[in-house]
Length: 73
Image 1 (cartoon, one colour):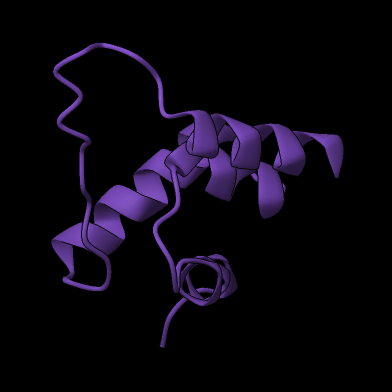
Image 2 (cartoon, rainbow, N blue to C red):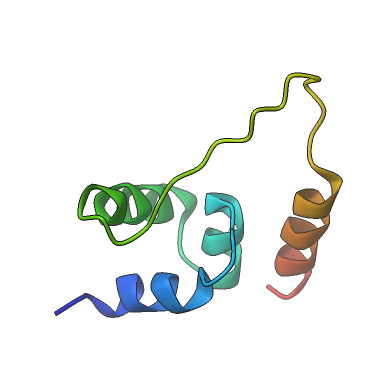
């Protein structure tokens, strides 16, 4: 059985989410979110994707979602 925090991450991550967004929306410290997501990835529960951003510019849509999550805190 999964811990409540991991269950919350799975429910929230039906779409692609950043670890920062998971941390903000689920109100958990960033370090905790990173560890939980890494552990869940090792268990095959989530997939971790890194953007191939060859231009070096941040994703505006992602930044807007993170800002929205932070405003809700």
